[in-house]
Each structure stands twice: as C-alpha cells, then as structure tokens.
Length: 195
Image (cartoon, rainbow, N blue to C red; front, side, top):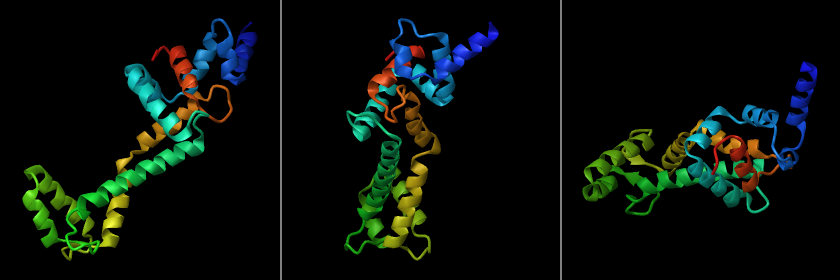
C-alpha cells in the first residue's frame, strides 16, 4: 500500500499541472508537489499579501510576456530593464548638475544644485558625487558617472528580488515554458492564498 501511495505521489508530481487541476478535487499530492516546487520566500509573499503578489505577477507577466505568457527569457529581459532604470536614475541624479553640458559634474556645478536642494537632498547629492568621483579630483567624469551608475544598479535590484522574479516560472503548471496569470491564480488557490 505504501508503494502505491508513493507511486501516486510521483505521478502527481510529473503529470501536467492543468490536467490535475481539471480533476474535481486536486489531491494533496498535487498541493504537496506545488509547495515543494515553490520557493519559501514566494510562498510567504503569496500568503502574507496575496493581492499585492497578484499585482506584481500581473505586471511581470503582462508587461514582459504579454497575453501568451511569461518565459524565462522574458524574466531576464525584465531584470535587465530594471537594471537600466536604476542606471538611468543614478545618472540623472548627478547630471542635473551638469550646467555646461560636458557630461561631467564638477564640485562647483554641484554646489549650484546644492543651494536649491533640501537639507536631506544636499547630503545625498554630496555622497553620490563623492562615490562617483573615484579619482577624487573634484569632478565626476562621464566614465566615473557610468561606473557609479552601473555599480548602483547592480546592488539596487537585490539577488532576492531577481530570484523572486525568476520564481514566477514555478507556476508554469502546464509545462509549456510560459506562465500565464491564470496559472498563478490557480496555484494561489491550491496553496491557500486566494487572490
């Protein structure tokens, strides 16, 4: 009997997820397999804030995968897009002080911007400029700005956040290499985190 239960559990893990969901009442083996496949951090996020999780999933799936669903390549594109957004933000922060349009920010140019900034922003601008000006000559050159922006972008999207995006593929319940929002919603229902 134990062997039969073990085989049933194995079959449930290997069978297409959609077919199992089509059954009247999905078995505990399916739920257990889904729990085993889903990273703990993803399960926690789903259960703690299901509506927020659905919004994030919908944004990722529809924003980068479209109606046909999200693929692994689409997730990598989303990660690259977030890195690009963070790089652009970092560049913009200091280039707003580039008064002579030479793609470098001197301390004198920064001082003009500091005069109009709030106390909190003044501190931030000084820290950002110092971090970018790696040769300490008082000017954050274009090359230094780019290096600073790239380094900040790499740390701005944490490994955990990128892993959470990649974990969306856990919900490819029909095994076609793409995740659609319905698959996420079905998985959430099975995992006790209704959207």
